[in-house]
Image (cartoon, rainbow, N blue to C red; front, side, top):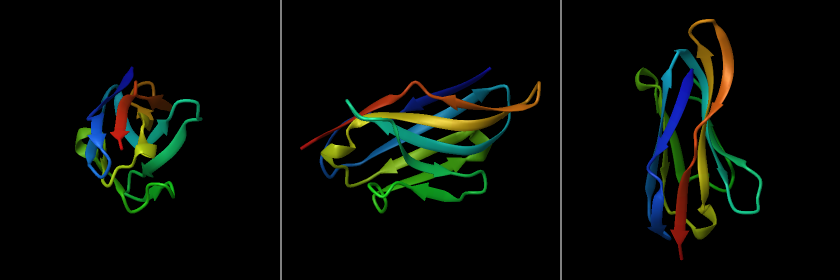
Length: 121
């Protein structure tokens, strides 16, 4: 089985910074794309940023220039550095990964349990 565990959420004032981490563990052969999504109350879950196994990144327009996604393939971990946070960034942030399972060999998509980020004005 594969598990994604997020950490780093919390309460911060507008203009502040937070760094989220997501570590994947379990029966992992390799990980393709990893990403961060968020869901605010009453809204649909949306993509924040993603990063391929080769390091190609993609950002939502709302966070471009403020957030940076990175990964450590040796640790099966993805990070999201969030700077210049705004109240509208308040949401539950979820980690997502396309994992190639070691045995039997197949690819599956996994979600973390989510971590709350609250930005006060």
